[in-house]
Image 1: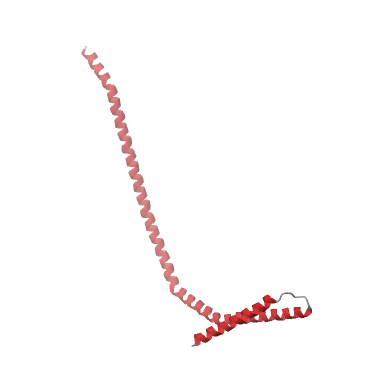
Image 2: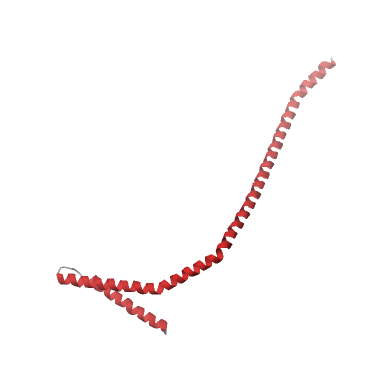
Amino acid sequence: MEEIKKFESFEIIKNDMKALALKCDNLAIVNSPESALFAKDLAKEARGVLKWIEDERKKITTPMLNAKKEVDSFAKSLTEQLNDSTKGLRDKILDYETEKENIRIKEIQRIVEVEKIVEVEKIVEKIVEVEKKKLKPLKNILLIIKNL
């Protein structure tokens, strides 16, 4: 029931605000002392209503904001040490994983170097084989010359 009354009150205030805004909008021209006085009174009334709304809003929201600040402060006092400790733990884990990755990279580099050496040895063996084939006819000639 209380919620319905609040809603009805809100609707009444909302309608009053619309009516006041409409009065301000419908004031076509200010061109005489009387119309200037009317416009000033209307503006004063509008400022008064706006101030009242702002004051009422603050009456409602200030206790909530203060309570939120207290809850935030309390929660921070509960979680601050754990957050710091968790950050320290994450740093240690990162250090470990970084070292592990560095070791893995070094092993890959070592394997690549070994593979390069093996490739070079294969190339050298092929060169030696080719050179041996080139020398074989010379050996045959030397043998023939010796046998003469």
